Image 1 (cartoon, rainbow, N blue to C red):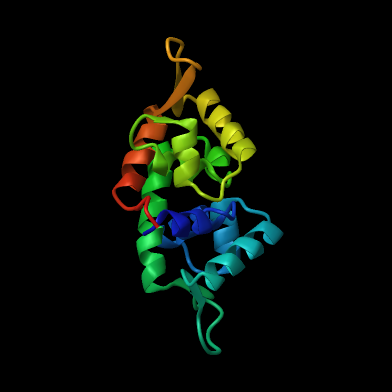
Image 2 (tube, rainbow, N blue to C red):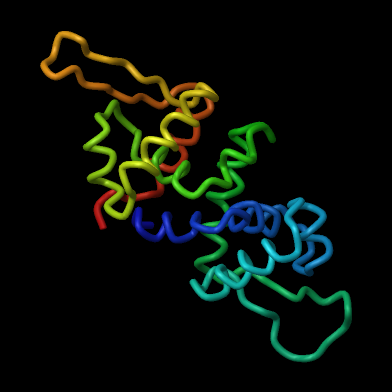
Length: 181
Protein backbone atom coordinates (compact mmCIF):
# COMPACT_ATOMS: atom_id res chain seq x y z
CA UNK A 1 0.00 0.00 0.00
CA UNK A 2 1.22 3.50 -0.77
CA UNK A 3 1.85 6.08 1.96
CA UNK A 4 -1.01 8.32 0.74
CA UNK A 5 -3.45 5.41 1.11
CA UNK A 6 -2.10 4.76 4.60
CA UNK A 7 -2.52 8.44 5.47
CA UNK A 8 -6.11 8.29 4.20
CA UNK A 9 -6.90 5.22 6.31
CA UNK A 10 -5.44 6.72 9.48
CA UNK A 11 -7.04 10.14 8.98
CA UNK A 12 -10.04 9.08 11.10
CA UNK A 13 -9.31 8.40 14.76
CA UNK A 14 -11.23 5.16 15.10
CA UNK A 15 -10.59 3.64 11.65
CA UNK A 16 -7.62 1.54 12.76
CA UNK A 17 -9.26 0.16 15.93
CA UNK A 18 -12.41 -0.71 13.96
CA UNK A 19 -10.39 -2.57 11.32
CA UNK A 20 -8.39 -4.40 13.98
CA UNK A 21 -11.50 -5.47 15.88
CA UNK A 22 -13.19 -6.72 12.71
CA UNK A 23 -10.01 -8.70 11.96
CA UNK A 24 -10.05 -10.19 15.48
CA UNK A 25 -13.57 -11.50 14.91
CA UNK A 26 -15.69 -8.96 16.78
CA UNK A 27 -19.17 -9.22 15.22
CA UNK A 28 -19.64 -6.63 12.48
CA UNK A 29 -22.52 -4.85 14.18
CA UNK A 30 -22.51 -1.39 15.70
CA UNK A 31 -23.05 -2.31 19.37
CA UNK A 32 -20.26 -4.92 19.67
CA UNK A 33 -17.84 -2.72 17.71
CA UNK A 34 -18.65 0.31 19.88
CA UNK A 35 -18.01 -1.74 23.01
CA UNK A 36 -14.80 -3.27 21.67
CA UNK A 37 -13.30 0.01 20.45
CA UNK A 38 -14.57 2.40 23.12
CA UNK A 39 -15.51 4.98 20.48
CA UNK A 40 -18.44 7.34 20.86
CA UNK A 41 -21.38 6.79 18.52
CA UNK A 42 -20.69 9.91 16.46
CA UNK A 43 -16.94 9.21 16.12
CA UNK A 44 -17.70 5.59 15.26
CA UNK A 45 -20.23 6.65 12.61
CA UNK A 46 -17.75 9.08 11.01
CA UNK A 47 -14.96 6.50 10.97
CA UNK A 48 -17.21 3.73 9.64
CA UNK A 49 -18.55 6.02 6.89
CA UNK A 50 -14.96 6.87 5.97
CA UNK A 51 -13.97 3.18 5.83
CA UNK A 52 -16.98 2.44 3.60
CA UNK A 53 -16.15 5.38 1.29
CA UNK A 54 -12.55 4.25 0.80
CA UNK A 55 -13.67 0.67 0.14
CA UNK A 56 -12.25 -1.17 3.16
CA UNK A 57 -15.61 -2.01 4.76
CA UNK A 58 -18.97 -2.65 3.18
CA UNK A 59 -22.49 -2.91 4.50
CA UNK A 60 -23.95 -6.39 4.35
CA UNK A 61 -26.50 -6.52 1.59
CA UNK A 62 -30.10 -7.46 1.99
CA UNK A 63 -32.51 -7.82 4.82
CA UNK A 64 -31.64 -10.49 7.30
CA UNK A 65 -31.48 -11.78 10.79
CA UNK A 66 -30.67 -9.24 13.53
CA UNK A 67 -27.51 -11.16 14.36
CA UNK A 68 -26.23 -11.03 10.79
CA UNK A 69 -23.21 -8.74 10.57
CA UNK A 70 -24.09 -5.20 9.56
CA UNK A 71 -20.55 -4.50 8.31
CA UNK A 72 -17.88 -6.71 6.79
CA UNK A 73 -14.36 -6.26 5.49
CA UNK A 74 -13.75 -6.08 1.75
CA UNK A 75 -10.75 -7.85 0.21
CA UNK A 76 -8.69 -4.64 0.46
CA UNK A 77 -10.06 -4.17 3.97
CA UNK A 78 -8.79 -7.59 5.05
CA UNK A 79 -5.21 -6.63 4.14
CA UNK A 80 -5.52 -3.29 5.94
CA UNK A 81 -7.15 -4.97 8.94
CA UNK A 82 -4.19 -7.35 9.29
CA UNK A 83 -1.87 -4.34 9.38
CA UNK A 84 -4.13 -2.55 11.89
CA UNK A 85 -4.22 -5.61 14.13
CA UNK A 86 -0.41 -5.97 14.03
CA UNK A 87 0.03 -2.28 14.93
CA UNK A 88 -2.33 -2.49 17.89
CA UNK A 89 -0.69 -5.72 19.10
CA UNK A 90 2.73 -3.99 18.93
CA UNK A 91 1.57 -1.40 21.45
CA UNK A 92 0.47 -4.02 23.95
CA UNK A 93 -2.81 -2.16 24.41
CA UNK A 94 -1.07 0.98 25.70
CA UNK A 95 -1.03 4.47 24.21
CA UNK A 96 -4.12 3.91 22.05
CA UNK A 97 -4.84 7.64 22.25
CA UNK A 98 -1.52 8.32 20.51
CA UNK A 99 -2.35 5.85 17.73
CA UNK A 100 -5.61 7.67 17.04
CA UNK A 101 -3.84 10.95 16.21
CA UNK A 102 -3.87 11.72 12.51
CA UNK A 103 -0.16 11.86 11.60
CA UNK A 104 1.44 9.54 14.18
CA UNK A 105 1.31 6.33 12.16
CA UNK A 106 2.36 7.85 8.83
CA UNK A 107 5.34 9.48 10.59
CA UNK A 108 6.35 6.16 12.13
CA UNK A 109 5.95 4.47 8.74
CA UNK A 110 8.37 6.99 7.25
CA UNK A 111 10.91 6.56 10.09
CA UNK A 112 12.32 3.22 8.98
CA UNK A 113 15.71 4.98 9.03
CA UNK A 114 17.14 7.99 10.87
CA UNK A 115 15.82 11.15 9.24
CA UNK A 116 15.83 14.91 9.46
CA UNK A 117 12.64 16.95 9.82
CA UNK A 118 12.62 18.06 6.16
CA UNK A 119 13.10 14.51 4.88
CA UNK A 120 10.10 13.31 6.88
CA UNK A 121 8.04 16.28 5.66
CA UNK A 122 9.03 15.56 2.06
CA UNK A 123 7.83 11.94 2.32
CA UNK A 124 4.52 13.03 3.86
CA UNK A 125 3.69 15.65 1.26
CA UNK A 126 0.39 16.81 2.79
CA UNK A 127 1.65 17.39 6.33
CA UNK A 128 2.16 20.92 7.64
CA UNK A 129 5.28 21.91 9.59
CA UNK A 130 3.17 22.51 12.68
CA UNK A 131 1.45 19.11 12.51
CA UNK A 132 4.77 17.33 11.98
CA UNK A 133 6.43 19.22 14.83
CA UNK A 134 3.53 18.56 17.21
CA UNK A 135 3.39 14.87 16.32
CA UNK A 136 7.14 14.40 16.70
CA UNK A 137 7.00 16.06 20.15
CA UNK A 138 4.16 13.73 21.19
CA UNK A 139 6.13 10.73 19.98
CA UNK A 140 9.22 11.96 21.84
CA UNK A 141 7.25 12.35 25.08
CA UNK A 142 6.12 8.70 24.88
CA UNK A 143 9.65 7.61 23.92
CA UNK A 144 8.52 6.22 20.57
CA UNK A 145 10.91 8.58 18.77
CA UNK A 146 14.35 9.77 19.82
CA UNK A 147 15.57 13.20 18.75
CA UNK A 148 19.32 13.69 18.42
CA UNK A 149 20.74 17.17 17.74
CA UNK A 150 23.94 17.44 15.71
CA UNK A 151 25.46 20.56 17.30
CA UNK A 152 28.58 20.40 15.14
CA UNK A 153 26.66 21.03 11.93
CA UNK A 154 25.86 24.61 10.98
CA UNK A 155 23.04 25.25 11.49
CA UNK A 156 22.45 22.50 14.12
CA UNK A 157 20.23 19.75 12.73
CA UNK A 158 17.88 17.39 14.49
CA UNK A 159 17.72 13.77 13.50
CA UNK A 160 14.79 11.55 14.44
CA UNK A 161 14.88 7.81 15.06
CA UNK A 162 12.05 5.41 15.94
CA UNK A 163 12.70 3.55 19.20
CA UNK A 164 10.87 1.11 21.49
CA UNK A 165 7.20 0.79 20.47
CA UNK A 166 7.74 3.33 17.69
CA UNK A 167 10.44 1.12 16.19
CA UNK A 168 8.19 -1.94 16.34
CA UNK A 169 5.41 -0.06 14.55
CA UNK A 170 7.88 1.41 12.05
CA UNK A 171 9.12 -2.09 11.18
CA UNK A 172 5.56 -3.43 10.82
CA UNK A 173 4.46 -0.57 8.57
CA UNK A 174 7.78 -0.42 6.71
CA UNK A 175 7.21 -3.94 5.39
CA UNK A 176 3.81 -2.96 3.94
CA UNK A 177 3.73 0.79 3.26
CA UNK A 178 5.59 2.14 0.22
CA UNK A 179 6.85 5.67 0.73
CA UNK A 180 6.83 6.51 -3.00
CA UNK A 181 3.38 7.30 -4.28
